Image (cartoon, rainbow, N blue to C red):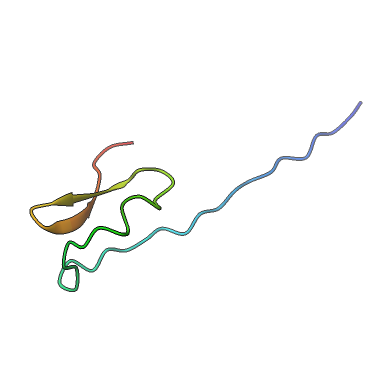
Length: 49
């Protein structure tokens, strides 16, 4: 019997500081999960997923 090892990827959860955000947008495209969007000039985590 062979035991397979599981690989677990742990990703850092980004916190968005709305009070500091100026809506410039460079955080949106590098997000691997596509979980950030600009709403009303501020970066927000997408709902769901």
